[in-house]
Length: 307
Figure (cartoon, rainbow, N blue to C red):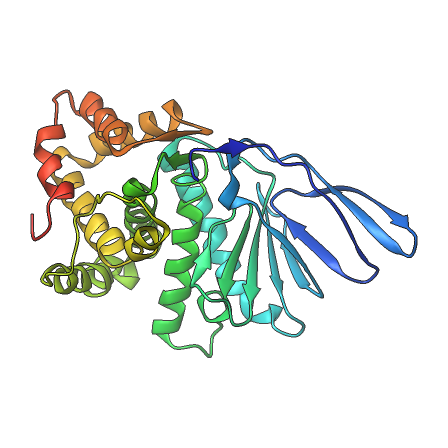
């Protein structure tokens, strides 16, 4: 339930030789009957679905060149393929901090490669998990693979603000998380690597798939009523990601980039460590723009089909 938020303080008892990762850094550890008890720093107020605990024989690489510390965690022998993702993560974090005018809120962020992970990635605050193919790439990887890694890393880092710092109140506004993370990941990469032509990639990978999905009778509006677990699962699709991101890009062009950015900053600062609804986001943009735009965007997000 996203609107239920809490602080978490973890103590974890494990066998010697195993490493433990959670959202926050380890603050102390002690021997306990042949095992080790790790104490983690307390988390900020966050939604319960963002709590993470990982135990295993992790191989780690640490980048402490800036704030936050970036830590890559993989199974043995695979960490050398994570430097590309770490480099992208550092640049994208810097971009987001400037764009949002809000620093990343935790002292560290783990990028964790999980073999056979069921999903592409999960944005646990400060301890992001990835399918190995969505995090590991090197000079021998194809351009398509490197683009995919860069996109997923930037997407999950965008969630550290949109989704983690400010969380949707209920799943009918899932687009607040996913559409915005999709939009911002492409914006960041287009700015940081113009030679990649990421907006062209966006049209091919996001807008075109959304148009195809939206042509089906089984499609749904960007914002849809959610009343059950099965409804939630069906919302993670090309509409909530690609169509929502495409509409946000269209809307940014409509109001202007700086008005849009100021509205985003206002929204994030107003609802930090709390929950918000789609109406709250559009109201923040309206205040920045100086005109009520709720009537304009209502049809775009509440009706199925091409806007």
